[in-house]
Length: 98
Length: 371
Image (cartoon, rainbow over all chains, first blue to last red):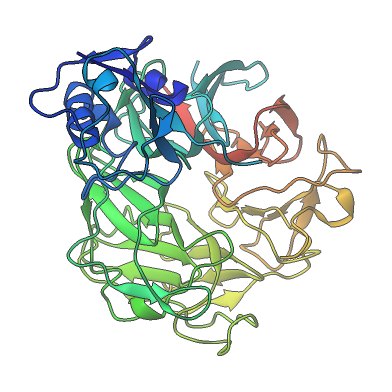
């Protein structure tokens, strides 16, 4: 079970309270987690990464285990603590705008 | 008694303002989609309870919202705006070719007769259409592909398609306007397009009377006389009497002919409204006085409308989609400001009063006349 934390605006958009818990089959990667998230909440398609190609939106960041994973390869395995649900996978709206 | 619903898009959410036919007391609902930029909210002429809203943010991109109960509840719709084929290039600010990239929806124009059909004007400039209530969108590529597209350049606010007008008398005829490319017309439901900018003069471009490149801010039409178009250009208020084939200036005695919105009285096709703004460098009213100007002669002769509007220390702007009229017997006129005020006049502009004073900066105002 994977725990995912979304920024407030996206929780409101998807009508989510608190963390999302996802079952991800196979290897747990950023791509597989986001695929599972968008399958459960189709309204999030296009709001975290592009519709086509999956490129991360510029002001969205991915954190876990006190690391910035935003620039990691989408298919790279996530830390074991995320894969086991010990630590959440954080989708963050970057601080911007002054 | 019939009533009015005013749909307001702001930098931080949407608001729905409703009143009875007297338009003196208002109910204010919102913010809807709090924290998001709402570039435009508009209702279907065929079903006034069907509303569409463009919701966007720099973080999370574009969302389209749809309501089937007049804005009491909303459901997200489709937000995939994929340009047709391989995106071509337009000119970037430095003159280099730049691939078309979708940024946001500026304007939503529901069909005149089908609530499920709606057009979207987007940045980078393109025109999309949905025939399934905004669930899926298809580009009408003939506009970008008609020939001049590679020469289009963005204005300071981005290269946006901000005006879509559907001709009620001639099915298939539609108009679009792009900053900073100009005005365009299709006579075959958007399949093919051509520029309609003959007569425009713009000193800010190398060839002042070029076929394209003009910074058109807004176009308005009265449905009873669709061959007559009114335009607020970057500078100059213009008029066409032949569906855009040619334009002539009608700025007349305006204190400045820079501005953004232009609109037409619901029952008087020759009565038009603009809000003069000092200049492109000074985006606020001249002399700190917020004045709507009305012409009852289709341009050239203008009168200042000031009753109820601040006449000192006012330095707000009124953006291109932030003015609207209702079609009650005594035409109501509405506009919103970057200072968060929405002003209403229930007597065609003679007297004004704020409905609300402290909203976020207003991006768009639309008015629906309810049965």
